[in-house]
Amino acid sequence: MQSVADCAAVPLLEQESINKLMGLAVFGEKVASKIYLLMADLKEEFAPLLTKFARMEAQHGGWFLDASRKNGIEPDKEFADNELGYLISQVDQHYADKNFEALAIVQGFIVESLAIATYESFLPIAHKYPGTHEVFQKALDEENYHVDWILRYLRLRFFDAHEEFQKLAEYANIQGIDCIGGTMMNIAEYLDKIGMSGADCAGAMMDGYTQLLEKVGFEQRRATKHVVNMFMPLFHKYRRGEKTK
Amino acid sequence: MLASDTAQLTDSEILLWTVLHNFEALALSQYEKFCSALATPEKKELVSLLFSRVPDNKAMENTSLDQPVKALLDAATSSSEKDTLLIQGLLLEVLGKTIYDTFKDSESFTAATHHLCSVGLKAQDSIGTKITTAIKERIGTAEQIYSAFIDISKPVILRLDALGESLDQHFSEQFDISFSDLMGSFVAELVLTCTNLGMERRKIVGYLTSALMGV
Ligand SMILES: [Fe+2]
Ligand SMILES: [Fe+2]
Image 1 (cartoon, rainbow over the protein chains, first blue to last red):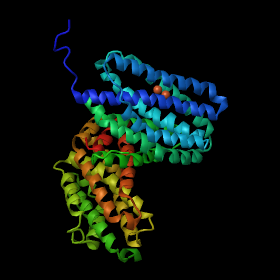
Image 2: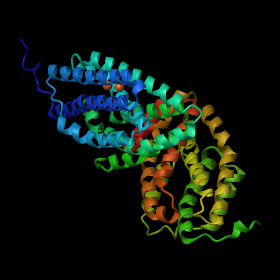
Image 3: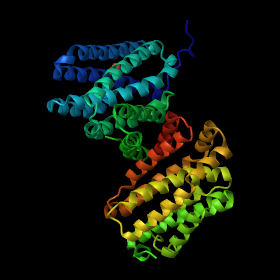
Image 4: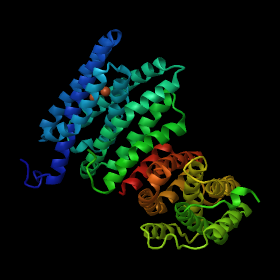
């Protein structure tokens, strides 16, 4: 039989934080799934693979929802919807423009970078929520698998066309980072409250994303400047305690 | 003497160079105190040129720049060779280089500012490699440099970023330059300088992120 001490309630703030974070993970995975489906719709030759990616993302959402239930976590849909609305409207615009490459950058680089940075940082504290380590590790491996394909696709697509890629990335990034980097700032305090570090996650996301840009043809200095410049206004807002969107 | 030596600075440029003069003068006095090899003739020439152009702080007094400039000067005043190498030598020299590099080609400035920038870059050039060598010699391995750097640099980075925001209020429209963007270039340059010193990029980016987020 459990003692009263064993059942001690999780402090409210931590509970609220994990509810919000899991909300973003569960519903963010659904959005990721939707984006891969839109991409599949735009490029028939990659449709089977991208549809498979979409299924994998949907499955991640399912795993996270099950793990949440087992830990008394209520994924906060309202919070997630609020964070994801801006992303969805951008994605819809890129789809309407039939801009497959912009979708590839937003999903494959920006959204995946956020997921990878946060899932990686979650693993060391996952033991606090039994059953989560396994599913986050599996999801992380699969996110890296998705990024691997996106990277290969963009490298080939823009082989010998680095300038074109840089223009496209700069266009897709300005909104993309404002949106996803903004979400990173908005969740930083919740990450801190469950024992992770919001700043470390943001740093990992920035660095991971910069490296992806370099691999497709940005020169190191330009990639670093480009990414840092996009994050600076977000840092300023964070310091002033303002929400980023 | 070149024509640009005597060209007039505009009022806004006088304010800008008053700020920069304060930092260059502090750098030189710190170098003279703690690492004389860095007090090169070029650095001295820069400071004396700035002194001849903006001899006092009048332009800055009673402006909203006064307080953040003093706060940063205060945070950047070190009391040891090691701290001077990291704060002045590493951090603020990278900042100076970023500023001079950005201003020297901008058409928003007069020839007088372009000239001061070129003298600033020459001074920076004269100590660039000396700083790297001195940091490695005096502080040690990349890991030791990283630990020492994160130990002391956070308040300076924060105040620097706060000053950037004030500078924007004063200058961004006039000079068509955003100091927040300039901070971005500076941070990017700093990351590259730190990785050249052997520091791990992921760690330095993580550290700078937390410093800029103010946590
Ligand atoms: Fe996923
Ligand atoms: Fe993924």
